[in-house]
Amino acid sequence: MRPSLSITIWLLLIRVTRCPRPYRLGHEHFWTSGTDQGEEGTFFWLSTGRPVTYTNWNAGEPNNFRYENGEEEHCLELWNRDGKGLKWNDTPCSFETFFVCEVQ
Image (cartoon, rainbow, N blue to C red; front, side, top):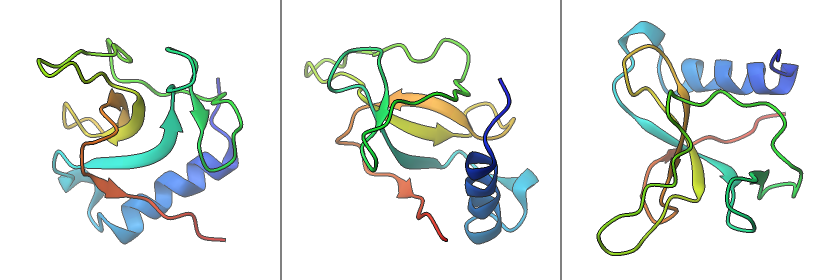
C-alpha cells in the first residue's frame, strides 16, 4: 500500500526538524497518536479517532509485548531499530519518547 501524502510529509518533517542528517539517525523513538487501547490489534489515531489505514511496522510488530510489571504495548511509535530508517513499533504508553508535531 502506498503511503498517503500527509504521512510522507510528516516523515519528511521528522527528518528536517529532528534529524538534519537522516542517515545518521540514532535509535530514537518518536511517539505518534496511534493506539490500540480500545481493541487489541485495532489501531486508531487519538488525534482524530480515525482508524490507521497505512502501516509500516518493523518485522514482528506489533507484538503487544507484556512486561514483568504487567504493562502491555498499546501505543504506536516510530523507531529506527535496525538503523534502516523509521518504522513502526508498539510500545507501552507510559514510555517517554520524542514526539512529532503536525505542521500545516
